[in-house]
Length: 406
Ligand SMILES: *Cc1c(COP(=O)(O)O)cnc(C)c1O
Image (cartoon, rainbow, N blue to C red; front, side):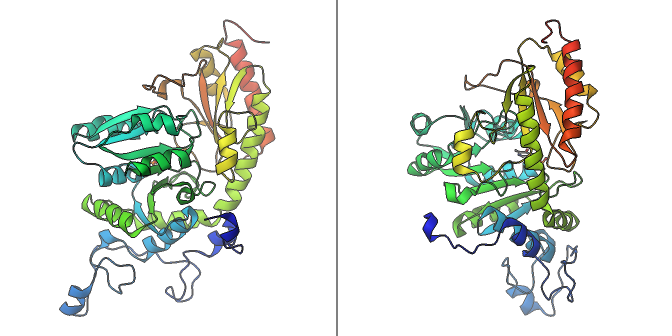
């Protein structure tokens, strides 16, 4: 939609998150929806049972696997944030990756994935998908339209994108890649977890948007959850049918916790984005650091496309240490940090640090980074405290190095 045709009165994210997916009159006037747990759905008579279907407006559902009011409330909010029409919830972010891949690919098909794709997505493609006779080619995430065009095969049914890439944060030209995919009749599936709310997938040519709600939506590192959002009836049917066939499900208790997390997400993300940019800029000026991989940082790789396509950034980024520092020194630095937990995942209220050198797989022959890499997630702590902690960490790095930098 051209900018001048967009409704000018669309409320801001914080407003929408305060009002979407509320209980309305269904919870006896209470502000929030109730947790509806259940398998069996009871009917007053057989005819009502036979008329029940998998439609959101039906008064009666068929069975718990099809979701209930708590799921619907969360689905409404997620579809709204992503700018799509319908949302399917699944138990984890990884299930939100694998379900649409299985929905659009069958034996004999070809899939293209960026070399920087989330590790378990790569593992699914080279493992289970390959075992089902689905071939996957990994491409340079920074490829342009002509480059993708050259990789498209008559049987390419899915062009998968993830922008920025996991661990290495390459920003992809999603609109250009989507145009090529669509010209060949392929679907564009996007892992949009990093860009949640800051990147509107359906305005950039994406057909199916994947979210690990485990991250900022939940926001407290205590729930795993995934969502798949579509923007057409056809895509919805495909994703919904596959999800039900696989028995995918999300716990209503977890959905309720995600709804609760979402109410404060706008303020958390705003604060964490600001803190992360402050820490990233500080790191960029440090002599021990060769490169800061934060697309929102002026001068960082991918910044131009990020500026064109994104309205903000999350608080996850990478740093590349100067090539003189060893893996042992990078690990000693990470171990010395007091305010950063060492662990996977991100999007919670707490800061994390993770050496990532061993997690970066590259088969497309491009994008090799020289120097140890560390991924940082910036939480809600005061940035000054985080920078003081990193400062002492960098001192540990230097003291563990055979070729110390001064
Ligand atoms: C965390 C993550 C996932 C998977 O989410 P889980 O809920 O942990 O399964 C998928 N994609 C990206 C980019 C992630 O960071």
